[in-house]
Amino acid sequence: MPSTRRSLLTAFLTLPLIDVTRMKAFAQAAPDLVLTLACDDGDEPTLEREAGPFFRPNSPLERDLYPHAPGGERITVAGFVFDSRCRPLPGSLIEIWQADENGDYDSVGFRLRGHQFADAQGRWWFNTIVPALYPGRTRHFHFKVQRLGGRVLTTQLYFPGEARNAGDRLFHEALLLDIKQTRDGKFGRFDFVV
Ligand SMILES: [Fe+2]
Image (cartoon, rainbow, N blue to C red; front, side, top):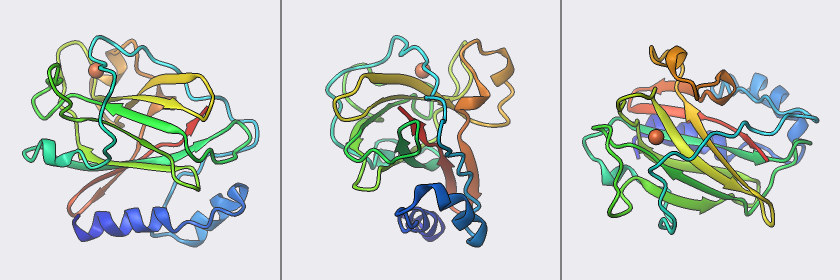
């Protein structure tokens, strides 16, 4: 993993998480992170969005998906899974599926599909590529998120500044990734509330 993205991911992974409600103050004290930590007691659950026609069950346990598409633009997407009281939810299932660098989904195998379980502090991350646009949609990732013993949240995450966002009936600004451009790729942040 190139150095800039590694340092961002390392910073993300070394956040002090003992008192999550104080993370905003921590981020302000660590300007390199410039994290948007919109986590408050009483947060609304993450909006749901339809799975669409391309979901396939039984994806592999895998968070490094970029080798599946070496021609794509690298991005690390990362965040927490919280409950509505800002408490991290370790062990939550996070599953991703996405279009490739040409706007195609793999409907035969599991290219650019994978799942993982949030770590002991409720964090997840995928190293993948930026999905290309395909007809009728703005740029997006698909996700399923399930806390231990909970119901499955199915949703989609979007990219800021996309021309097609405004015309996509599924787009919602509450589902925007917080994207940073590094020297060697993008870093996108989103926290799920389930
Ligand atoms: Fe899609």
